[in-house]
Amino acid sequence: MRRDSFFPMPSPRLLALALAGSALACGPLVAAAGTAGAEGAKAAKAAKAESAAASPAQPGGKPTSGVVVTYSAPAKVAVGETVTLRLQISGVSAADGASVEVRDAAGRTTLLSTRVAAGEQKTLELPYTGRADGMQFIDVVTAQGGRSSVQSLPIRVGSGELKLKPHGQRSATAGGEAVISLPAVTSGASR
Image 1 (tube, rainbow, N blue to C red):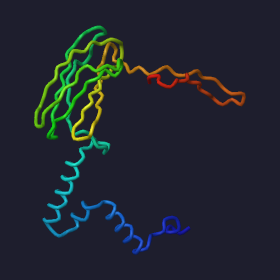
Image 2 (cartoon, rainbow, N blue to C red; image 1 turned 45 degrees about the vertical axis):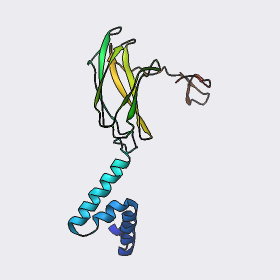
Image 3 (cartoon, rainbow, N blue to C red; image 1 turned 90 degrees about the vertical axis):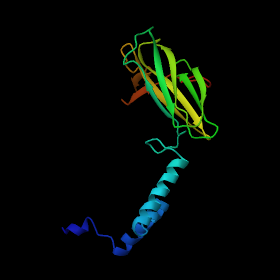
């Protein structure tokens, strides 16, 4: 068999159309980079900086509030032990500042709510008691300039094992197909 029968080469015209389409899809960044010399590089940097400033993004590319949250916690907390969590808030650029709300994900309670002014870096100290064995989470909700985001902070309590919800009951149909029956959830029930 001939090798090119499996992988035919596209025509030069088809390649040119594909490259033109990809340049259109990439928008002003490619157009700016395509201009001559140093001016093109400057224009590309400006376009990239403008899009990043307009909508800060997480690594996955989704817009976020732009508020930076870092934290420190003990490597492990004993069940019933109370420790101090330290949250450092920065990256506030909105003129009216940003709101920060810290929630206990398991108990669905708000532990702390505060505002941070533009340009301010704030350290929050928060007492936390490990109530159950396993991996626990604290959610930090930040909002500024009409955008919000949630960051879940893991805290190892006791063994630090991640506990999954109980699985359903496993059975088989008359035809031998495996079936897992899960409990029904009524409206208004929590996760």
